[in-house]
Amino acid sequence: MAQTYLNYIGGEWVAAQRGRTFENRNPARRDEVIGLFQRSDHEDVGRAVQAARRAFDAWRHTPAPKRAEVLYRLGHLLIERKEELARDMTREMGKVLAEARGDVQEAIDMTLLMAGEGRRLFGDTTPSELRRKFCLTVRMPVGVVGLITPWNFPMAIPAWKIMPALICGNTIVFKPATDTPLSAVRLVELISEAGLPPGVLNLVTGGGAEVGQPLVAHPGVRLISFTGSTASGQEIALGCARQMKPYALEMGGKNAIIVMDDANLDLAVDGAVWGGFGTSGQRCTAASRLVVHRAVLGELQERFVARANALRLGDPLRADTDMGPVINDSQLENIHRYTEIGLEEGARLLTGGERATQGACALGSFYQPTVFTEVKPSMRIAREEIFGPTVAIIAVHDLEEAIAVVNDTDYGLSAAIYTADVNAAFQAMEEITTGIVYVNASTIGAEVHLPFGGAKATGNGHREAGRAALDTFSEWRTLYIDYSGKLQRAQIDV
Ligand code: NAD
Image (cartoon, rainbow, N blue to C red; front, side, top):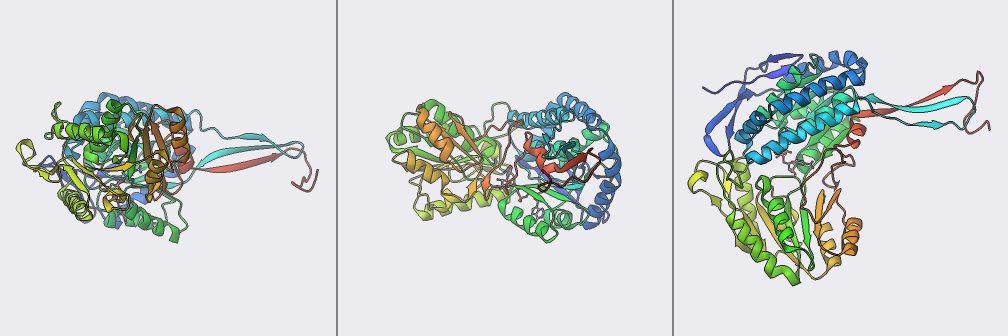
């Protein structure tokens, strides 16, 4: 009998008001039920927002270094439980264990980074234009914040939002993806164990329409931070705009690796395999396009396809598995539809293009590593986010053409260039219109102390992680202290 997991509201583990649940299954073997989770709705959201509002005053008045103590304790709990958290994550969403450990590690890093911010949260002090007047800025919390997260980084992405929100003094209603509620429950359990006061963080599980939308619409929620697809992000933006509610969106990507004629091809192939097929291509920063100089096209293609064919698919808990399943059957169908679209558009399939159903893949949602060549930048497989192990190779004549191809997409998250030419590298860093550019490294590999996010349809101008995260989760208050004892008029009295 599968275990039932509850919502966390006001410091209590509680069932959804209507008593409904949903099932979460292991994508590597669909016969394994991970657990039953609360199928919540607007009533549960309402209760969670109420609890968060009640907790807000006490939490915002808790000195930031004291808030940080909870995060330090949490960081240590996460370190202690890393292995078990990673295993749960792999079971519920299928990324291979090494990557799941990396996901938990990212949460640890973010927790400790933000704990350190408890003794910084620096503002500015600056001279006044008037005598005997003092000017400074301080960060103030926003209030109750709604956090909506996707399934592909079940612990890292929630941590990227929860930790800066907490250190800035906000209280939270957290809605994780329906494919990964277990990792969310585990994280919240540990935060509670670390001593977070009741009501400061509330967890409500359930679908985008039933929980996400009411959270966006709730007038008591003062900010939405969302990571997910561009289509959902657009809906959320519209919902927030109606209420003049700030929102920070991190959305899709169609990231590219440029391989120049002078590139170290061993390195480039390593990066292309990791970027294209890591997490079965289900990363917002996945390298789904390879933009290759014609002089090295044949050799790169041959080596890349050989490596793709050598990837071992199967049980993601096993240390010798390279690639696990994709998240669910509907995503599997979506990926396969793009294979058909690629073929209809006239791209040439070099390998893959089918479900993987043999051996250890028989019971799960697996797709073969898939490589298309002779892809034109105008084709849908070169423009739309597939979010699976499908890579499109586009041939170019020179750097200018390569950069133009990289930029010729609605998205703007991550890009990479492999080259030995420092001039080419700097030109790429300057001209590519993505939020992140790598040189001689793949499109994935964010570190938590640097800003993360994208331009164009990937984001709405905010950045996550690093100090930039504090800008999302706090509001600047500007303070002027006049100690002259008389009326002084800025811009008028000199
Ligand atoms: P999704 O948009 O389907 O769902 C994301 C979350 O939003 C889920 O919790 C979902 O329930 C909720 N949701 C969906 N519609 C909603 C609505 N109208 N109102 C409120 N909430 C709603 O995305 P997904 O399939 O879970 O994740 C994959 C997508 O996430 C990909 O597009 C990927 O590129 C993107 N992603 C982006 C980043 C980034 O930092 N840029 C990181 C990871 C994933």
